[in-house]
Image (tube, rainbow, N blue to C red; front, side, top):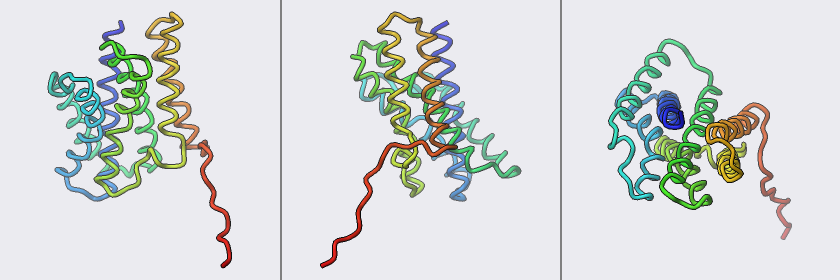
Length: 208
C-alpha cells in the first residue's frame, strides 16, 4: 500500500508539475521544444537536485517512465492550451497540488534513506520548490516561492506535520494524506484569499 502510494505521489506530481511548466511556457509563447524543456525542468528539477544531494541516482534516470510521463503531460497540456484558453489561476492551482505531492514524496524518500527528520523536511521542501524556481528564473519571472502568498511555508508545514505524525506512531498513509491536505489547503487559501506572511513595510522616506 505504501509503495503504491509513493509511486502515485511521484507520478501524479510529475504530471501536475509538467502541466504547470507547460502553462508558464505557453504564456511566454515558447515553441514546443521550449515548452518541453521548461516542463521537464519544472517536474524533474527538484527531485534531481534532491537525489544528487542524497547521493542516489536521479529518479528519472533510475526509471525512464518519469521522463516519458513528463513529456506526455507537457505535450497534452500544450495541445489543450492551443484550443482552450485555460484560466491563469489554474497555473497556481496545479503548482499547489504538485507542491504537496512532491514535498511529501521528498520527505518520505529522505526518511527512507535514514536522514534526520529536519533534513528530510528540507529535502521535501527542495523537491517541491526547486523545479518551480528554475522554471520561473528561465522564464524571467519572480519565483512563486518569493511571492507574498504562502508557498514555502505551506510545504514546510505539511512536511513537519507528516514527520510529527510518524513520530507519534500514526500510520504512514494517514500521516501523508494529512500533510498533503495541509499543504494544498494553505496554498489554496493563499491563491484565492490572499493568505500571506507579514512582510516588511517601508515607512515614508525621511526629509533631508
